Image 1 (cartoon, one colour):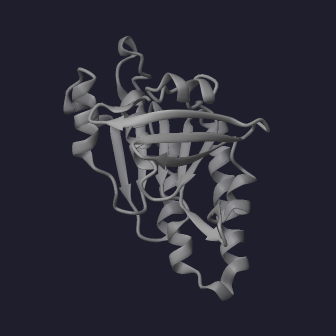
Image 2 (spheres, helix red, strand yellow):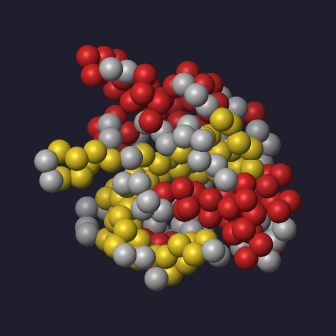
Length: 222
């Protein structure tokens, strides 16, 4: 398990983000998706005597959102120095082909424990017009299938983030059907004032949720 640094959120996930499984986190802009990923990067890379995995991280950045200074800030608050960044490998990608190529590094990396893709569907949305919807779904499904196999066969935790769209008044995950088929855990994030809510949608059929905050220290209980 990789802890989220929130007891409530860890309990929602059955102990944390699981190695060997694919976790999907989606929500509107500003709901804490990337901040959660940064916290997981720190908690994966930090030493075992500080409740980390002492593992390497591959951060696949599709939206130019990776911020090493934020990682360093979270690490410093946890009593670590910025050398933790040496364990986090960042792949800047600019096309869906780049994204597919980036995950092929997973079996080759030593002591890899966490892979983050932020944001998994954005490039597909940009590249494929509405008239090419079937091809877009098919290619994303192939990518997600390959990603799920890497999680299982390479024994790494993989977390993908995704945005939402609105159908009338209802908010749904973008390209949900192409993604949900292959994910083991699915979390919906929302924000109410300064409190963030995580709702577990998969695998549980029950209504389960947890609340947390984001501070200079990173993720913490509300």
